[in-house]
Image (cartoon, rainbow, N blue to C red; front, side, top):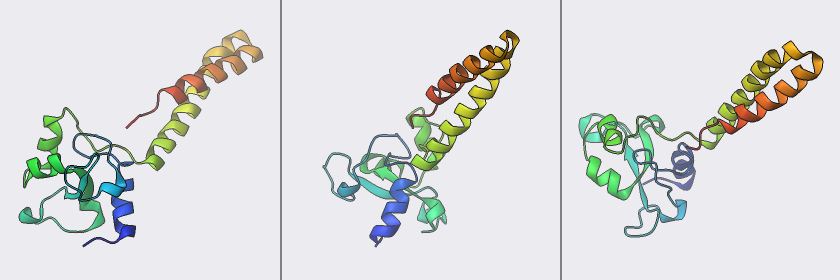
Length: 138
């Protein structure tokens, strides 16, 4: 039903995690019931409720979550797992990490500037390190 290119795009949207419970999935176990990290393509808006096969409606979901969700709203299914959004893609996490590092460096540099040029440099380095470590895991 889905070619490898489309499956890769769907899987990569959440960096290989179930979009409902955030469990790590195994790309090679697509549709393999009972296998560790097995997953399905999950329709955020179910086809029964008018959802499409467009990429923006397709997410990777572990088989258990996909079957339990049925035709319910994705927001409801995520709430069962205390989640409010899908995991970020690897590209999105990289962008957030970069933005946090720059923001931390600017704030740290500004705070350190009260101690002169050396304080600015040290503050920027510390702020950048804190910003980089304050990035999303999922």
